Amino acid sequence: MRIGYLGPEGTFSEQAARRLAGETGALLVPLESLVDVVQAVQGGRLDRGVLPVENSGEGSVTLTLDLLAFHSDGLEICAELVLPIRHHLLARLETAVGEVHTVVSHPQALAQCRIYLTTEYPGAVLREVASTADAARLVAGSEPGLAAIGTELAAELYGLQVLGRDIADLRTNETRFLVLGPTGCRTGRPEKTSLVVSGSDHPGSLYLMLGEFARRGISLTRIESRPARTGLGRYIFFIDLIGSVDDPEVQAALTGLVAHCGFVRVLGSYPASTGHAGDAAGDTRVADISDVRRDIDLLDDLLVELLAKRAALVRQIGTLKAGTTVRDPKREAEILERLKQLARHRGMNPELVTQVYRVLLSYYVQLQVEQQSEAGASLEHSSYPSPN
Image (cartoon, rainbow, N blue to C red; front, side, top):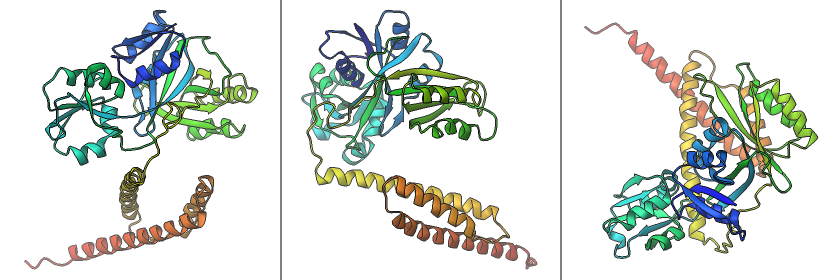
């Protein structure tokens, strides 16, 4: 068995490939790019290829999605792996903490550690390279003062010290990897299916697509859009669902999809990963209170950012309501009812969510009232005769 992954040695992709290989004695082959991995499997030079597809903090790896959609002929997904991501700050042995002036790594690794870097190294220059292992290799051959975000394996391979351990902003940082092989490669009981479908120009087409699954009680674990490359505003959708293409209900849903989509392609049915950060690699570390508080602080930052964006949209609506009544009781009731249902679905207290949003809605109404008053005063002022 030959398994390819994004190299060089020391990447998280290598860790995923090692897990896939287990005790089989498979040959692990590092390649320079994800494109090389896919093409090597297509050409028969590899039996399997391991590709990162999404991270719990930074979202999807868009190159992998595009390769699956447009360049994976003759291949299918035969397995998935979920790997806990442990980022460390690596430097040469003689580098002191205060000497670090530049940090290099893969763009996603830098993004996943942005709070740590801003707090601990606010003046450091951030440089992007092709992989975390490339970053470690670069640091190993550089002058002191350069540091890399990478794996503990990379530190061992390139003779580096760990200046900062577990520096990711989120404690539950995981990356999901897909395993590609030739068509018919799947083994084990398929529990999950991945699709790519094209969107339609018809109004409500996405609603109709999702309805094919909802009517049959099929759970979707992921849906994401990417440009279809056929024109501006045209998209394809990646869908992950619980179930196998061998299940009658899934087959019926796929048949129904054809009526709403330009094309439907099954990328693979495969066993669902049971790996999670904390058990997939024997990680028994228990987060202390400061770890949890840091995660809460990050979520609070995101909440405030989202509230600011919502307020900006409310102001836009206020402009469109010029000359009409600000308060819309029917719309407010619809919002509150929808949020109550969402709260119940998420295990939240619906009354608490309702109270919070009543405060927000009252604030937004007052915002629009003041906005209209200011607009009226401005209009009245502009109608005065010029003193000159």
